[in-house]
Image (cartoon, rainbow, N blue to C red; front, side, top):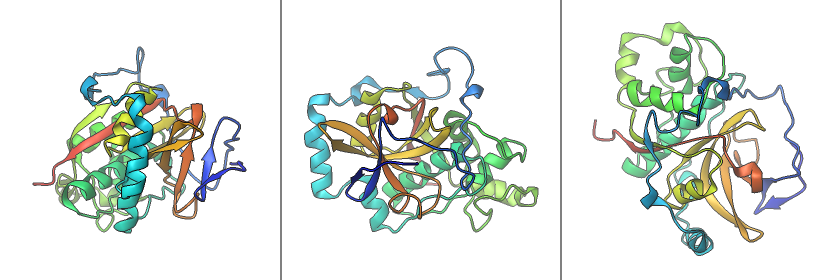
Length: 263
């Protein structure tokens, strides 16, 4: 991936950035699975509540306040020393991003710093195949079945030996109980969620990849998004980069809001 521009040391992926194929990392976004029509929007979770929309006229001031007070999701991640995911050679980006969102929601609601296993969801969902998917199906799985910690199921292990009754029971302790679908390629909904410090799992057709949107950013007089990738801490700035312009418009966007922290 080539770009000559940086924002506070973070790579900016913008209109002229060439997003190249690389055998070093897995991907796996497959939006062909989502069915006909308007991406099946609103059929699996709450659609975006209109009352959560934040007017564009407020974006710049709110973003600057979040930066000055260090109350962004990225600030929480750094404070709690919680590393990004690393999918390695798996095609499970579509589960890594919702898994990371789940970890962030747990940090916000309970202070727990969890290291959850994307493979504990994706391997079972795909019948132990290393294949692609999309965020909505991943979150549906997490709400119904939960995820194991990596101490019980290694992060990228596509191995039936971990699919035990005990692990299925343990996974139920780490579930999302409320989440929202965003309209595809809708910047208003995406920025509104991020201004409310709600992480969003975002899939991008141009990249063939799903990543985690964590912060709104104000660059060149417009809003952009900070993402956390699932390619380990050596990618970007400790796993983070900025998406700007059309490169920031996701074709798949789902946002976990509430975890079952009381169970």
